[in-house]
Image (cartoon, rainbow, N blue to C red):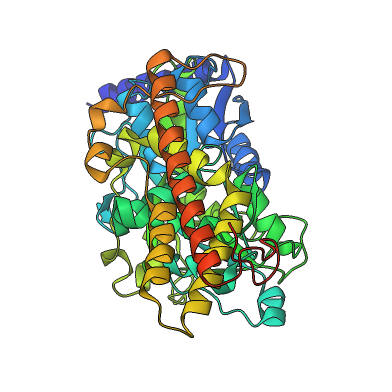
Length: 455
């Protein structure tokens, strides 16, 4: 009996050695949107545990990485990112392999969202909190409060003080855009984003640019994810992070790609990320992420540092990643056409709307009030109805078009239709604002001044 046991043990050890040897034959390529300060501790710690395996991190924006994987333009073994809808897109495209479960002690659901994909094509490894990064000195100098909710960013007091990234270039930003659409509904959600667009100082090229711009005082605040709130190389205390009242917490995930060349090495890396050692790395000051495993948080720690101790936190909020994935590119197309491309025009028009609304607060004139209301309605009206947005099968074939590559004809027709409707809305707003300004006896006010009323 004992001899049989040792024979079996030797066979198992030999098999483990063969797996490790095979995994070491090629490097493990990890496609990720995470910054170097998160990646380096994992690379060095994994290397000590598996010295024969080389890890290569390839950094890409989430939106670019998803497009490249779906389009088979980039070969990698692992996809590692925060945005859950990105993993849903890859799953639906058949680009993710089924993984084995790795118990971490995490609850099955967080804020109604599964920690792991029910089909095990991607696994949660950390918690991501989405909120506001702000510069405390900037806000104090201008007498601005820290926003309490997402819709607060639409308040006139923040005009010229907000920076964002475009959702078509940032998976983090896409999730926040979609979250507002889901929480407030399609029509009201786009209205909020239009008003936020009227408050923008800039649209940065990447998510990192929002926190960096806030830290440098280029603008005062912006939406971001918790681990990007303290950009590397910036003075300590130049930024702070706040979670809105409608807190959005979702798992950040890791997945093995279906065509992984080094499946064995990929499995070992996922094992490590979800192991107690890998989870503990997330708590380091250089990484500053929230582990998915409750067991690795220090005993007696504060509720601020351990989200699993915050009563009711995970009971709030619900993000439907499947819905977001189904209309992912539709939302990107509308946002860029309605807000990113027209930022300057939106800023000017919303300044006029607010100036007129202030002027009308001092007099009663139903006709002028109707004109201003018409302008506001046109600026906040999305180019497609909420019912159309829920015709999800129509939008699944939309793709992110790379620069220099022609847009597929059906998508080109849709984009032209969206642009035409937004043009019509902007023209309607412009006419209403011009008529309202003339009715106030101010047809020639400078539209760029602080009291601008002309569109």
